Image (cartoon, rainbow, N blue to C red; front, side, top):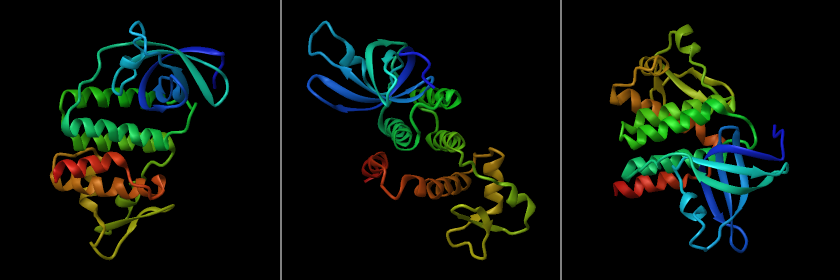
Length: 229
């Protein structure tokens, strides 16, 4: 809950767009949740707001207002920007798009904020993308209350499982579009060195996120596809 009319928060810009004359509507991930705010952006050379309001830049912002759409009156740098390129840049956009579309506003999510900050640092260091993305997706699901229950894999003797909305993992009769028990156990235990396990993990998470995203395609995923063609 917002206890005061004015708050100073650490934040990352997730998305921005023109709103009214000399203003932008921004969505921020802050240390106290995701918020939407209007910010005045002057064309004056004395103002550095426009330069600071970039993705992947740690910010210190002042937010005013108790209603759904707040006002941002101050923007300062809170650290060096993360410099991302190529697929690591697209991965950063992917994280932002997931948060914009799925994370509710004004709900504290301190652990997820730290996970996001750590993910940007790892992308900046050009660490392996697939493991990083899956770990962030898992953290986001837990924040949304949709964590995957792997217990059935240990309790049942089936070798193949499929994912069913509102039920989770259930035994399957065919490998077609299913997930092997061996790979699911590796995922649950964090053993993600084998490419085949990572591919299974990617398919599983895409299937889990599909209903949450409502069937609307992710723009950041199109960037990945375009870069590989």
